[in-house]
Image (cartoon, rainbow, N blue to C red; front, side):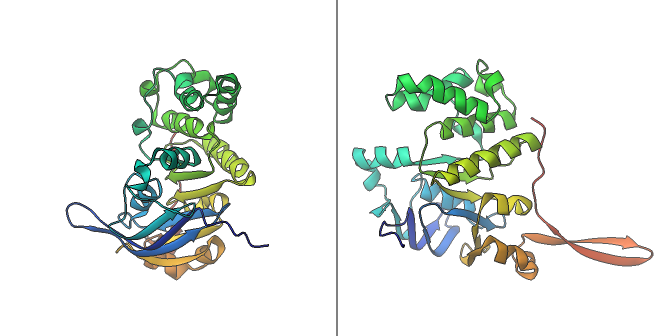
Length: 273
C-alpha cells in the first residue's frame, strides 16, 4: 500500500552556481522515498558532492526548490531551532575528508559526543561500545583521531554517525581509503541500517560494489544535469551509456602486433589502513 508520507527529499528543478560562476547543478529533479538506497553517479565535476551538500543543508540551491520531510530545506528554515534540531538528528552526512568531522581528544569521546549531546548518558556507553565494535575500531578507543590513518579516520567517522541512529545517511565516496575487511564491515553496517528502514544516498565511483550499496542510481552528466534515473541493474547493463558518461573506459593494449580493446569499470581500489 503506497505511503501518504512525503518523500525524505524532493528536488524540483534545482540548480547550483559556484561563487566563480561555474555551474555545478542544472535543472535537477528527483524524489528520495523512505527506505531508498540511492547512488549518485557521474564523472568528476558532475556535481555529486555538491548535491550531497545540498541534501545535508550545508549549501543551498541557487534556483529551484529542495524539500526535506515535506518542508522547505532552506537557509531560513534551518534558522528555526526546532526544524534544524530535528533535521540534524534525522540526517547524517559522512564526507570524503573525515578530518572535517573529527574534533574530540580520543576516538571514544568522538563517538560518544553525539549520544551525550542528545541527553542519554545511560545509553551512551553501550551504544558507543557497539558502534566501535561494529566498525572494528574498539582497539583505537584511547587514540587521538588526528593521529589515525586515513582509513581509520573514516571508520571512526562512520561509527560516530551510526551511533546516533539517524533516519538518513548521506555518504560521499564511502569506500575510499578502506581495506577489504573494513569495506565488508561497512557494507554489513549499511545493510543493517537499510533493513531497519533507513534511507541511504551515496555518491560513488565504485561500480563493482554498486549493487551492494544501492538499488537505484541517478547519473549526473558533466554539465550537472540528470542523465538517467533508473535501477542499478539497468544502468550497469548499459555498457555504452556507462562509457559515454565516463563511468567505464576502454583499455587498449598491443598483443601479437594487433591492438586489442576491452571495457573496464571504474571501481574500488582500497588501501590498507
